[in-house]
Image 1: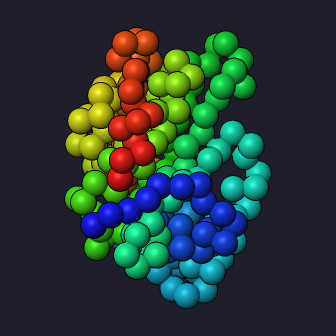
Image 2 (image 1 turned 45 degrees about the horizontal axis):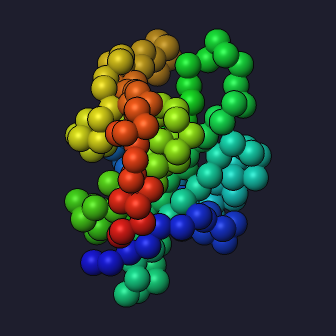
Length: 192
C-alpha cells in the first residue's frame, strides 16, 4: 500500500482527532479522561476543534499526516515538537514526538515507522536527540528506531478516582546521531 507523508492543514484536524479515537479506542485511560466523548459524533467534532486550537497555539509543533495514495484517505498522523534552540539550556529536550496515531485498519504496514522517521530525519538534520512518552502500543516501534527507555512509570490516581484504570508510560530518548550515522536519513524518509 503506497502512502505519502506531508504536513497537515487546518482541514485535516477533524480526521486527525478521529484517528486518535480509532487508534486508542477505549483502552487508553488518559484519552478517556481528556476526551470522554471521543467516540461520538459530537465528541469528535469538539476534539477536532481542540486539535485545531492546539495546532495554531504551538509554534514549535508540526503535525504531519500519512495519506493512502490509492484512496486519498489520511491513515495516520503525528505531532512533532522541534525545539531548535527554542528552550533554555537547562532543558534536555531537543525534539519530541508528542503524539502519533495510525488507523487500526492500516497498523503494522509501515505507516507509524514513516511518521516516526520523518521527525527523526529533522532531528538528525538539526543534530539533536529525540524523546517520546510511549504507551505499550508504540514501545516496540520506538525501541526498533533506537530509542532507549529512561523511565517506566504508572500514573497514580487520587483517591477520588480509585476505581479508574491507571495509565502506564515509558519515557524514551534517542540520542543525537553522529554526522556519519545521520548521513542519508532524509533520503530514507522520502521513500514511502
